[in-house]
Image 1 (cartoon, rainbow, N blue to C red):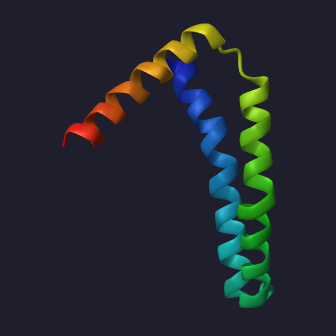
Image 2 (cartoon, rainbow, N blue to C red):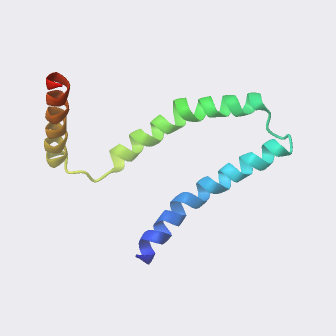
Length: 84
């Protein structure tokens, strides 16, 4: 239980720190709205897709079982779409 809490803290705290840093930088006038828009576009268009890709590549997933589960959900979804 403690390990799960520590793991969650190690994931959440850096994000909260960066959000707080951005908040205080904007309040002090060190980050303009144009900079925030550019940084947001860069993060959402380049950094997050790369992070997602490398997270999937580094994961230890049994592809056989994962494909069976995905195909089952795809069949459920298609049957719902076609019969409703």
